[in-house]
Amino acid sequence: MRQFHAPGRVNLIGDHIDYMGGTVLPMAIDRGTDLWARPRSDRLIVAESDNFPEAGRIVAEVDADPPRPEWDWVNYLVAVASVFRRRGFEVPGVDVRVRGSIPNGAGLSSSASIELAMAVALNAFTGAVVTAAEMALECQRAENSLGVACGIMDQMSIACGRQGQALVIDCQTLQVRTVAFPDDLAVVVANTNHRRELSDSAYNQRREACEQAEQLLGRRLVDIDKDESTDALSSLPASLRPRARHVVTEQARVIAFERALAGGDRDALGALMRASHESLRDDFEVTGPALDAMVEAAWAAPGVVGARMTGAGFGGCTVNLVEPDSVDEFEASVKARYAAVTGLTPDFYGVRSADGAHEVVA
Ligand code: GLA
Image (cartoon, rainbow, N blue to C red; front, side, top):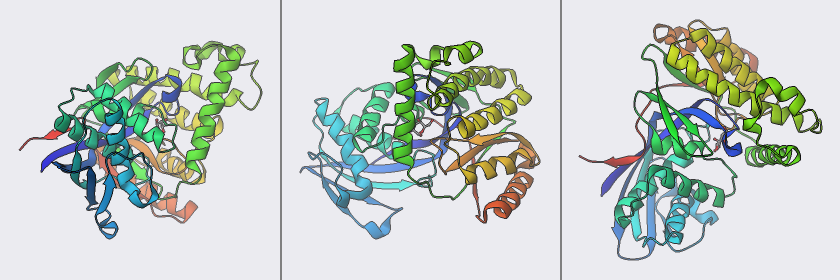
């Protein structure tokens, strides 16, 4: 079998603006999906996951249109096969084994990671020369076909990751810049372990609200200067105004964050992350008590540089920039405060930037 690897991702700043054509600032991480695969002579996808041993071997059809409930997680593989097929590539049946190190449902893009691992495998087997951005688009299409109207950030971060770098992704043009991630900052992802509820429908509703605001204004939200936003957004109905304001201000924060990273301005990094969380909490309303308790604990903890929710929200994880020498103290302090408020025990993952999806050549 040939081995392929796709990272997960953590978004440092710029949430809920990718689907509005905004610029986001994530990084690919050193937790991800290993996928071993070989072509078969029939039209089946025969897959097993070390993470779901109880599910056993799942046999799906490469020519089918997903999702089918009995195919469970393998629907991601079938969805990617299906978008490759529609592009005109001759996709073979495949034997697949998968092992992932990304906690599921935590907001670190385990599904996009599986999709991109499958996409690089199919790229290799079909001889398709699909670029990283095209692969990301195919995988976004695959994910959309499974019911979430997600943007392109996760798939692009996973396709284009670079060790040592954070990514600045323009989700309109799909151009990617890199910005060196400082060696003297630790990235700690904290899992609230609070189950995400109604996240798909609420996600799709937020996106619709932003699209409606753009239609009413007749211009792109990410093009509005934050200093003119009060006037520019004043004609919107009160229900849409805060959603639109989040998109406008978050976009400005991403650009300022890139500058602060490059210039090593830690105070600015912290202030921007805090403002981003507050905007996602108050204007976009995608945080909830568990995420709010987690960042409040982090803001008060020793060694913190910055903390915010990351990803879609509604539960899941926060991302924290921490002084490397203080990571243990930071985690102990956050854990105690968070548990006292919520009664939940968090998990912490120290992560580092990593390369994008690729074949692992021995
Ligand atoms: C999820 C989606 C992304 C993005 C984030 C929020 O991760 O898959 O496209 O919209 O939420 O920033």
